Amino acid sequence: MNYLQLSSRQVLFVKVDFPVFNLFQRYNVSSLLIKASDSSVPTYKAIASPQDFRGGQNDKSLVTSNAVEKKLVRKSGKKEHHLWKRRDQIGSGHKALNLVRTICGLANEKEAVYSALDEWIAWETEFPLIAAAKALVILRQRSQWKRIIQVAKWMLSKGQGATMATYDHLLLAFDMDRRPDEAEMLWNMILHAHDRSISKRLFSRMISLYDHHNMANNVIEVFADMEELGVKPDEDTVRRIARAFEVLGQEDKQKQFLTKYQRKWKYIHFKGERARVRT
Image (cartoon, rainbow, N blue to C red; front, side, top):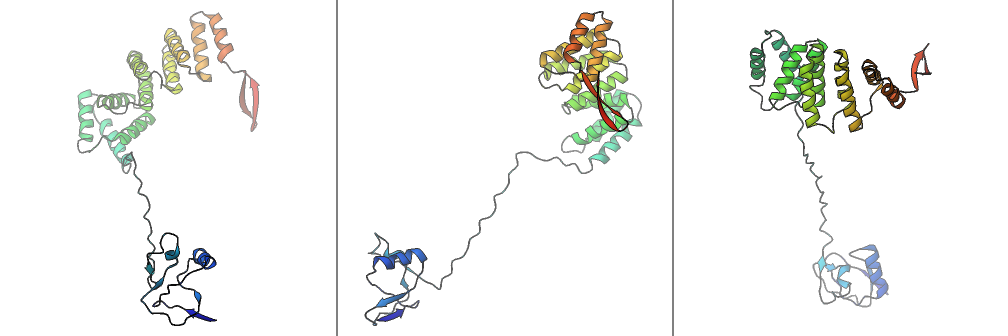
């Protein structure tokens, strides 16, 4: 028996048995040692590919070359598309400090302060909200309550900064500057616009403001809004509301309120250890 190894320039048209066909499919090769009874094989440019012997393709001669190397095509990674645009925070701290220095050196006049604030954003492509928020924090640390009121009102007049943090700064400034009437007007606006998204912190801020100015009826009204919206008061707010019931002479309601909201236990630190005691 003669075995003939076909080179890349030879082609063989033979009748292939089923086991040989399985070898082609299993190993996916383009040239094998094939048993031949006749050594006279015509020479062509390519050899028959194993795919030519599949069913339905006997009448076609598809040829492939071993010399041709398949090039691997790497798929490029998917590009990430963001629906949001990150605001530039570089230099926002310096902008906030410049704003604080500018308005603190001005007279306490609304026109002068608003004019300086307008000049501060004159060359900005978009409103510097981050810098303005940082300026409010700096002014709060320096107890500049009048300036906080001026900057916060200016922001709201521009349609910017209508957030719970801005409202908290403004209500605290109203409290410290003894303006409960303006605080009440702002609070009614907040209730009308953000009734279902008011935080517990803002409720506590408003109750604290009314408690500082001995407005017990207003404290009870804010507490009624808290109950209606399902907001549970914290420990300090519970004490202020209970004191308001006591001032109004409603001891029965005070007891019911304390039974429902006052904690039976609280934790204190004694000699470096955490201990639980009754309230």
